[in-house]
Length: 361
Image (cartoon, rainbow, N blue to C red; front, side, top):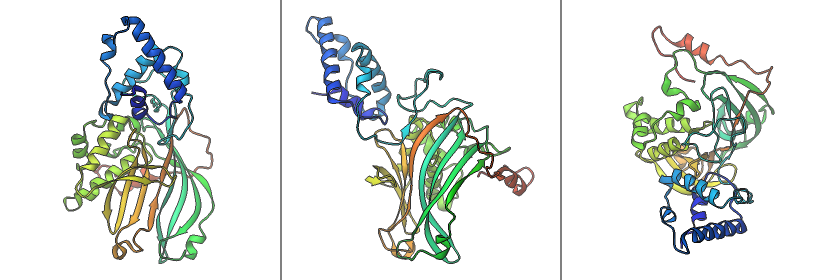
């Protein structure tokens, strides 16, 4: 017998699992009410609810709302369980926010213009200098205006570096300054191409169809390196951003359609969370984009050496590892009077010839 609460649990966004007692009580009250309304027979309205697939997850959200209403008083119990949370933690709308749009899923942010999206992450990427190579690590908090029109902020804190696989840690890496600091982040630069925007308002307007999304990834690519550049564009759209679920799903499906992309399961990000992954091998390194298969939330990236000669280290060595740990909506930027000025827009304007579009950051 299909358990409708299992169906809702599989399709809902990241949240603690429903407690067994709450599930049992909700089911009992639901079925008792149904039998009372129909004289013991399965009522016609209940026959409309069938198991749904992830493609129809929005139907599950609506069905769950109806179920919660019919078993009045159970909603709080259903959401009060404990357990592992899948995917990044996300904020819920506060009382002063307007009602969520129809496409907004319960438990996910409902960004509104005038507010800011904060992305918390931890990162590790390869760094080089003075002939040495090591793994640079940091924690970041990125504040981006929902509509992209206001400047944002970036908090970056350096962590202890790690040695590149197969190499000693160079002295330059050991001298990496500790601590962190604020940096301003320019909003929309005048004349900047729309395709390069990464604010929520723009991302929410992208196609929810995988073929249309794939066409977008290939819109401005060098024919010789088209597949590689399309993968890079997709990566940039996921990293330190937030987009609605429909667009996330379309983007992931489009990435899977790029020639050379390999799917994988149970790939861990730097926070130890395992998810599905889509990866491409370049220069001896397999770069994987990790996501929660239930919610399509982006979890992080993983770079693994698969060719010793071109990858520069032993096969299996990890040379990149990140985790996007939380997505929240905040009303305003934190106070950062000592933030370093971002001159990206000014530099881009100086380097652009008259009539040319300002290049992206």
